[in-house]
Length: 197
Image 1 (tube, rainbow, N blue to C red):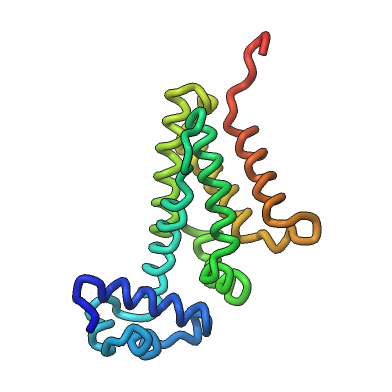
Image 2 (cartoon, helix red, strand yellow; image 1 turned 120 degrees about the vertical axis):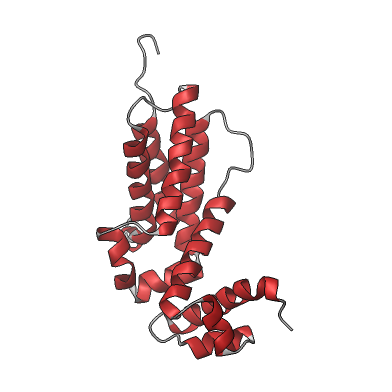
């Protein structure tokens, strides 16, 4: 029997399985409940509908990707750490079955968050990037500028690369795309060379 402490995660796990198998539009609350091994009223105690479940699922998965993208080894400076995390996040999003299913089959579901407003998970990602940009200002590895603007620009580069990667498959593979993202971010964030460098 599912413990109360883990039932929310079990429901999100079940939702992920349903979305990967059927897509967001064809996923029903009863399917999620059945896969999670709980009743529909139990699901309703946590979420009012499938859209709310999927929103929290995407937030959880993106948070896990970002946390998992933290550099495993010491970096020379904050800029290197930020670029490493961004590159790993792009690779992770491209290869993630849930995000891939949505981008390939139901991309319009992400349109609001690509063109109109930022969601909870996007704001959380921007917050992480902002802290890293500020650390780069402190150690001198990131050029001096408005950290909020820099973080937002870095976020847009990562989001665009991760969601539009199919537009590049005729000229480069994922590793090459990630290498270009690294170069782009490094050039954008790196301080101007001082005379003699």
